[in-house]
Image (cartoon, rainbow, N blue to C red):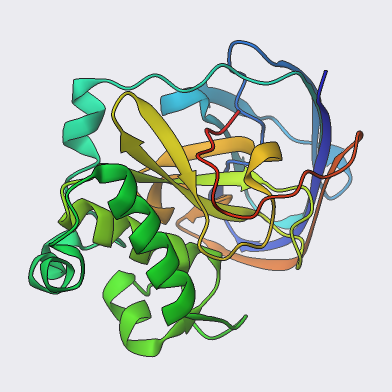
Length: 268
């Protein structure tokens, strides 16, 4: 049985009353056994946290904070492989639409010029993934949190979420449903929360990662949505908050597989 051990630690300072939402917990999906703990304190005292479910197994933890130092510690062990995510006609519709950071409608002409001669969806996915990987340079700090796919294309650089947004936008523009997935990624370097893409090909969601920073076979799903607006690990409403530090770990106990990028992989 595949066993993956993941954790995350956040150190926050709240200086004005706010509401925090966290999406750092592993999505509990059929086929895999998840044993986890979440500890959140405010100035050393346990915080009152509400958990509710999002789409595709996403778990959201919400807590109001007046002010103070907030420490978040999450640990999980995932044993086994989750069942492949199902595909539905509703998802096919939703994940073809333009979204906040994946503005597919801005790419229709460009995508058709670059990839319009490719007919098979699986070949389209491979071609777009390879093209984005070659087109962009991975440069931490080169993008802003409000940058979308068009900004990333013009800049020619970004981090994992920027790569993912450009892949999603291009695929949607080519009539291939695509969505962003926040994951724990054993082997990722630099280690952090990671963003990859799922593309609907036939009746499967195939994982695409143009950064090639981690093997796709051992990724652990956290949150799934249209783009980073749906999958951010930390969101605050009102108030003022500073993220002092974050630390993420993810390992697989039996050793990392080799991923040469040619295999069709589903996220499990």
